[in-house]
Figure 1 (tube, rainbow, N blue to C red):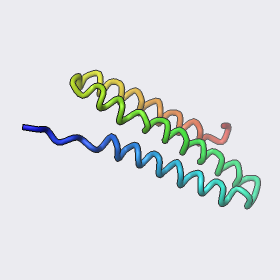
Figure 2 (figure 1 turned 30 degrees about the horizontal axis):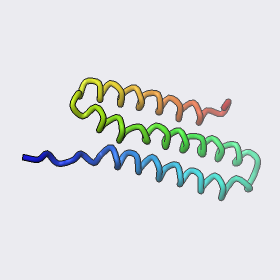
Figure 3 (figure 1 turned 135 degrees about the vertical axis):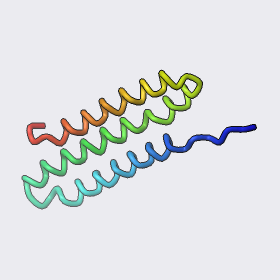
Length: 95
């Protein structure tokens, strides 16, 4: 019996890529409005880049560690925690 291939890692990566592109489009569209909005949009753009980088690790890590669920969950957990932390820091006004 053949197990079906899990597709959520690809969907997570595609979601991160779409968020990155949406943040970049929004940044380039609205950055010329005012200087204050420029800084907000640049932080959003950096958050999109961080989301893309974080989610791009999901498919290779998941499929590489498919036979060892403990390490798969460990790596994906650390990647998710560090990715969310990076996104939150990039959205801070001091950044």
